[in-house]
Length: 242
Ligand SMILES: [Zn+2]
Image 1 (tube, rainbow, N blue to C red):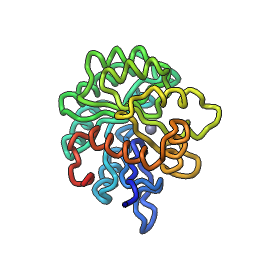
Image 2: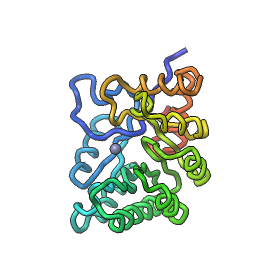
Image 3: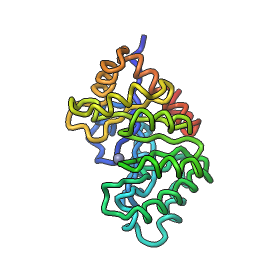
Image 4: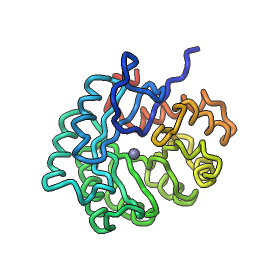
């Protein structure tokens, strides 16, 4: 039997490291998210150079007030230019950016994802109520919360709206009880894994940690998350999942 393939649900652009190409995390496919207009071109070129890099373009809440005029039109151009997702977008209570501008930027991008029928990659810190309220009104066809750090109850609420959940570095930190509790509350068919924020190791270590928490075999979880990723991406990248 062949090794299960690994899908990395959340990374950001970084240089192509030598002949091994991208995927330094050991993933077979990576969803590479943008943060601001400054990195969209880089993501577009990384994904055209290496078919294992799947592009997402979005304005992160940290940069909600720094993008400059015309950013939404520019974002739409990147999205229409190639199969791609909308991300990383969301709400962050800990950021300098005010909640009003964050919500406006978030909602504009939800509407864009919805209008173009693209999946969205969400970031949320301490704003679960406002996030769920915005999604109830303007959810794109499918979306995930990356590095999920909410409660098990919020996970159930978001799952009811169609949410996928990605887990990563927090599973490897002994003190992060919240992520360990949350992953047990997430439906198996919505589970994804990511490498953002890993200080060492790769995606296989995240999957192993999740396997330990859930009492499942790592290869089963890897296969599960691969199938979830295929469903999440909804045929946007038919060739890469063959
Ligand atoms: Zn990120």
